[in-house]
Length: 257
Image (cartoon, rainbow, N blue to C red):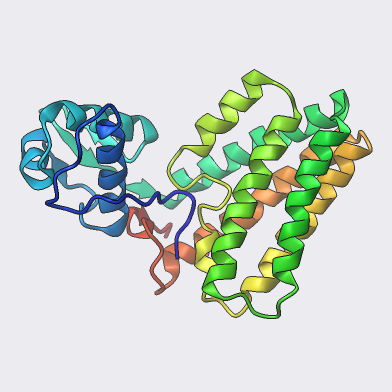
């Protein structure tokens, strides 16, 4: 099961990456995949020279990829040189999710107060129609669940755009790139849960509520719904760090006592 935080890449460990301007991005994707899969353990030190040998690329794209992963928050720079895979507390991730909910709530309120075009509202509601079709099935298989993740990410992106604010849009992109803070960051933990569909139905109802509030120019209500929506992600976080089921990257998070 994938989430939108895990991006697939064609390269495999030990196989040289093709040359070109996108080489640093490919290295970044591969290193992220290795971290989330546990090939690079939390707290382990990463050096450029070791990755040159492991991935078969030059130091330049590796250095760029390590810097980008530090900016994402997956790595931290060591005082003695090199980088280390970050460890996260459950509270850290919960705060990131709370921050996303706050910014999304602001976006929803601004969209409602300023008014969104009928075309924009239609695109967002069409996306929700696609989710409704998926949820008609009594049980979601892996393909349907993966499709839900895609549509959920699409809806949240469209919702952010409704505010028509480049400032808010940049902040949404920034907070959404924080480790585990994306809208579908912990949706995957529900995939094998008997209550998976029930949780998604609740989330979908909140999606519909916020769109209704935006359409009716009810800013305070729209903001409150999105703040509450982030609570579902926090619940999924709590389940992920305590679940025996594998969720990419969950091993990096230390459960609260």
